[in-house]
Figure (tube, one colour):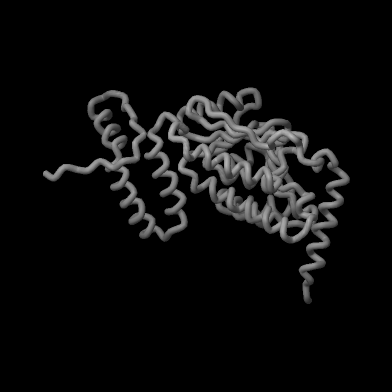
Amino acid sequence: IQFQHTSMTSVAAAGARALWHRFPRRLASTSASPPVVSEVRDSVARVTLANPKQRNSLSLETLRLLESTLNKHADDSAVRAVLLRSDGPVFSSGHHLREMDQGEALRRDVMSQCSRLMLRLHSLPLPVIAQVSGLATAAGCQLVVSCDLAVAASSARFATPGVKIGLFCSTPAVALARSVNGKMAMRMLLTGEPITAQEALASGLVSHVAEDADLEATTETLVAMVTRHSRPVVSMGKQTFYQQVKLPRDEAYRLCESTMLANLRLPDAQEGIAAFLEKRQPNWSHSDKEVVEKQK
């Protein structure tokens, strides 16, 4: 049997066009207001998907803005963490499907930019916490999974429904398969049906679930717990975590031995140990300059 790539592409395009007719508001033209806004408050960069009329779809513009916003906050030494949230009843509906029907060049740009953003979430020297209400689908679900932590409202739902329109969620599957068990990942990918917040928690897609009324308070409590620690220590630990999970166990131990020795040379490690021994609270400098050990 010979499968024609062009025929499969046309099936996906036809499915996408059918979806446009069902959800015309979702695919309206780009809003004049920016689809991503951010502010820094209490040492936290609060990044908001702010295009609810298009269900916070991840257009090329939105993907680029998210990456540039993350980079801006990563360069701000006063920022300790990133909180990613959304306006409206949908966290994110995934890719802007009209962009999938405007030629190969644009599709390549969208896919490349999306992958670059997801990778940046892992390499960012700050913990990224998602606050999820409503529905997160396809690349929107991928965005949640790619964050370091995620707090979901109890009414939130998660789905990778591309198979329903002839466009399998292959790139979201990369993040999904690395966070949830294989059977749950395939259930989501093959059926396209949404899972509940509790199912997402049980499978590792999110880290916390809160009642809808308590979502913001629960997220703020988690953010406060994360940001009370030393920025360079957290940054070093996060980056090493994602590096070591890809390695064989013996190589992972060697990498982490080296990391812990480097960590011990940071001023905040020495301050933290001294504070523990002296039974007091540490006073973090947040300096990444290694302390030169005196010869004994």
